[in-house]
Length: 286
Image (cartoon, rainbow, N blue to C red; front, side, top):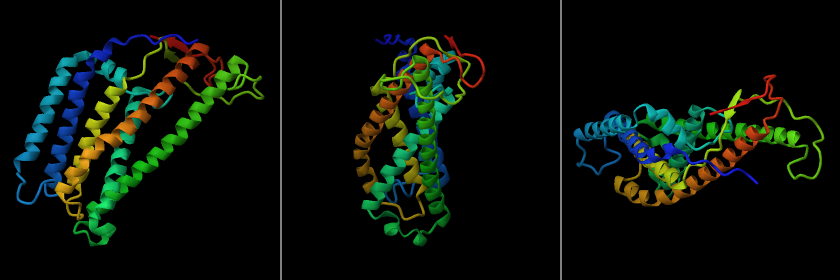
């Protein structure tokens, strides 16, 4: 029987954090349009030099409003709403992994859409007027996939190591059928572990924040594809109707990982294995 999760008072800051995420996305899209123009995003003749300024200004205003509302609770609210995607890692690692997952999901969605629309001259980037932009986008997408692969390897290694230590303290294997055959390898963990069991992030917040980030990333990717023979702007806009469906799948996976990792962290904290690679047992912290 596991202890019930404790309520987190900082979850009431969710709407304000969504405003901050939307503001950051508007600011990023405004900067991208200021750099590359609006030619890849808007139909020919409808671009305006004031659009990047308006988007960036709206983003700064939304960010300022959110920071004013949160005040000194920015770190606490962010930590309460950030999904746990790497066991016992600090907040900046959780956010970094989350952003990489979202950006990779957008890259997959954008790449699939462009394949079916024969964008970029049917995949022949050699004919792109701006080869530097084309090569940069391909390199960025490839880099995201490599980082995501590395994350997968590292998180599996950490989960297996923590599981083996839990089994060693419990005296049985993962199936409860018998004692461990060998001592688990040393595992480096923080000296202070959570003292209470925090509930997972609500899936509705994960979906909302992921969708906001994905929409902003999709706009930025399409914007930066100017000069690479991208898909027509109206075709891209119609394809965004399917983006929430894809983000729903991604959000479900993120939420499942968040729940599983929080449960693993809590079991590891409760058992407090005495050998963690640092020579001293970790202690709970508030």
